[in-house]
Length: 319
Image 1: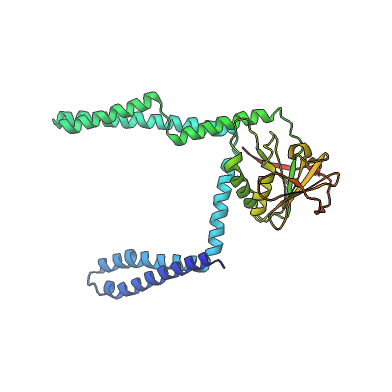
Image 2: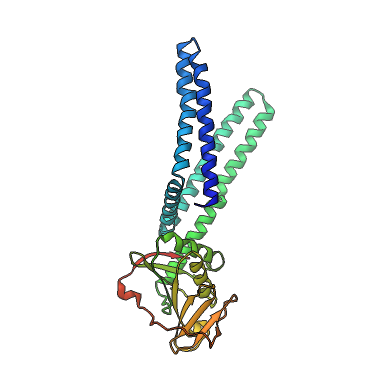
């Protein structure tokens, strides 16, 4: 058990004991009240709140890991569902939110105008002036149709996703593929791609876009349908390895500046990226995304798999 989880369990237990003790301390004082109505209210409201809270904390104390994992899974499923929405659907949502924001400003502006007139009739000049200013601002925002940053960001992301999807209709990748086997949770792959994406995703031309495929129950593949930067493969392999996975990738040798036609890329237990080409030349990289010939290293090259023979299921594109 993690120390952090043990600490949180102890906090939950402390809250449970404290709430239970307070409920017990209050009980005789509530029952001593001569008014039956007050006793009922006290038992239902006060005792009910603290007893329920104590039970809730006890549940978290004994089932913390299970409940935490369930919440994490529910959040991951919701984020995955949001990411997999088509660009058109996301764009439609952004437009709908923008219309709702504009209509809300019109309604609030009308309410502010009516309030200003009310204060004007009562000769409350200051309040009338303030409400008039508020109404002007709201009508100005509605007329200009000014988007909040959240909606603007959502629209821009949906538009860029549409552009990337359009590029994918005609693009042909170079056959690079990363295979990840024995995956217990898809979240591990998603976390690795998210960390990778902090630096490499988000280009307008879609470069470094990762397409995730499911080959079997616990076997997945990642491809680059719109190309990638030379250092991206090693970076992604490191992120996958850092998430407890064991990736193995195949890339055209000219993209990694190695010999031969194809290069098989792995990550050693030491954390170094290691590679072997189809003509038997071995390489290693410690930390700068550059593979260097390593004559003392001996790795066996495995043929590049053709994932399309496995009838893969496309899951989503990370752009």
